Length: 257
Image (cartoon, rainbow, N blue to C red; front, side, top):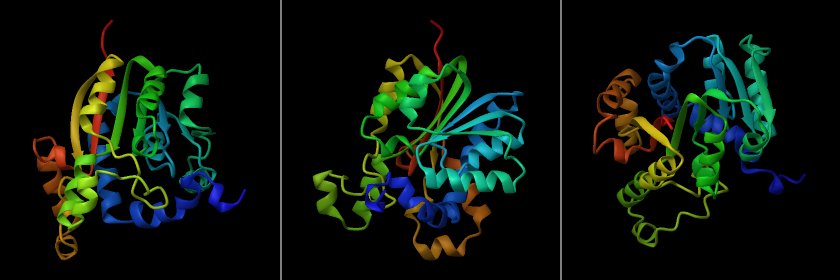
């Protein structure tokens, strides 16, 4: 298949590894997600779906803690890198790999999961409610959905600070699908509404990178990673910092019927 016809992540896999996960901003994202999920993962032997987990960082962390992990992604290139990293970490036999579109997988799956991870995926799909409903359909009755999405408010603010006024006023974020900026940044109120309509209760909300993405490069390079991490941790559950974070991370559970 010609490169132009490949799913976006097949063409972008290398850039994601270099430009996001191998950088301080990627390390901040992973550490803050681990902070939020640490208490959930204290329970033994959880059945975990890493939905759209790409290179598998969260899958490997959960597998190292002894949980049963399924990593589902539609990108062959991403999964090839994930499998290689799994093998290198001695986890090759502990993470079940599925190459399939998420909605299709969830629709066909007979399994239910105690924890469904869906991080930085929602903003890449056009039909957000469909994906959230699919994730809810494979969630065990007492399970937790860990949903992190790209915050539209942050994209607007960052473009305004950079002087991209015309783009902000037009409010059109399409056309980014060839790069690492997703074309469907999400309005937080809409995501909360989708969860509410599915009978999911948000138990925790936190910002991921409330400050880092707005810091001048010189400031990013001057301060130690641990200092920036401490700043993020101190403010990420509070308004208005949560609302202006690059990502918003929600932990949601099924409401009693």
